[in-house]
Image 1: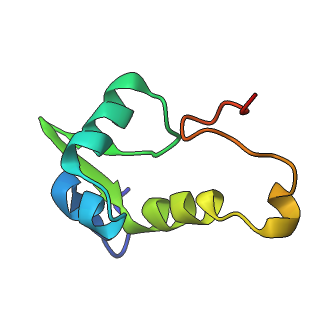
Image 2: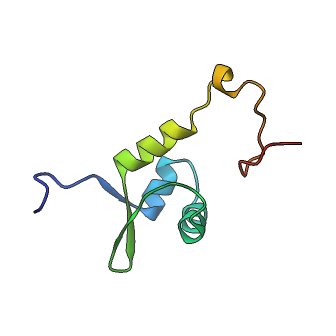
Image 3: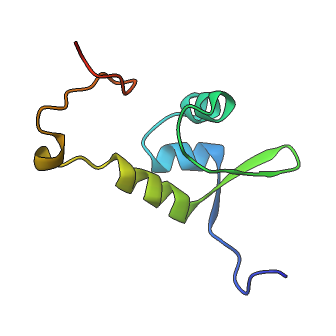
Length: 80
């Protein structure tokens, strides 16, 4: 069954711009599976739902209280 209104789908370039990232970064994340960012493949095209991008940004939000004493490197490993 088809949804009553189509989801707001962005191609990889628009999704990268929305995240203030690059096409190459999103492509690498998808290829490696290193980042939890869902995408849709339609034929050879990759699309991202705007709500998935918003949820991804929300998960990246860090507050001082929740991050106190938890310094991490950019790749998510704890700093030594």
